[in-house]
Image (tube, rainbow, N blue to C red; front, side, top):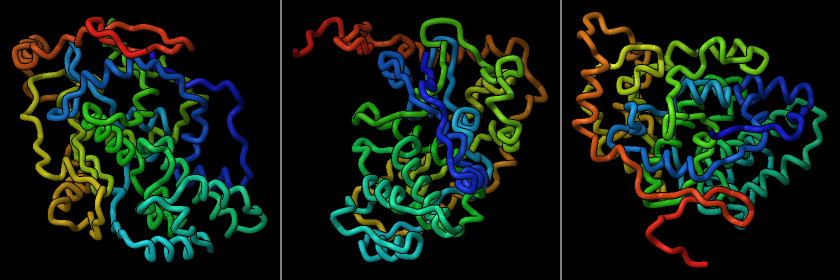
Length: 369
């Protein structure tokens, strides 16, 4: 099990700060608390991930972290504009944007490439006197950028946040109109797809309870009898209509696929044999490791997927009108025939390190002390 605990009371904010965090959709994620991670289970789930289908392959069938999980765990808005736009690689552009939004700009030493160091944002946030509306908005923008650079879109370094997100915060009233939840999920999927080659932080995965690795699997995790209305507020359900949409997930250069037709049971539907896995072509490997001055919303490689997200209401799951007899048996026969060789985990055992944390080691290979 992966759980989010609250060993300390949730943060309390200036009344106007809390109001703005709620209106932008970032309040609930600030209340997450400390994430307790069972490394062995996270590693097992990563091993189950298949980049071609964008699903976890378990003995009971395919499943995945979904837009519903993002909404219920982080409270982020999931229905809205795609999180995309320009990326500019020059320091002068970064400097100008910070001056425009914060009234001050970082030095080059406060940046790492196109990333603003989190220490600079924290220092700016802590120096602000919340005496007027402008300072309060700057405070909230700093807070959102820190959330993006840590919990939501954090990279391996955990030291900076790409400034590409900052222009989306410029119009304060429009911040909550973006689908930050789908962008966060795109980042998780991209991290899972690359996890076999790199060690990426997967915070959202640490918060999801997936019992199907070793035991029975709970397909509908958020049924009425399992949700505390005092914790999950009614406003989170406002976007629930698109949680089951089979659509691309968009975050600037990052395009991933929300393959809900392959895990229909997570939304209470009957599972049949799904369509062929979606080929994202070269967009699936796009990274910002080199300077790219590009508008990803209109780029030839990405505009098709952005448009598909725009039409997401046309791709929401519905019950199949002519379901075959014994559809689950048909699906499981197809599933095991196609993926049976990959349904067993590698020969790993769970051990505990000296601090009591669980780690996974190969039983056939001695580890260096």
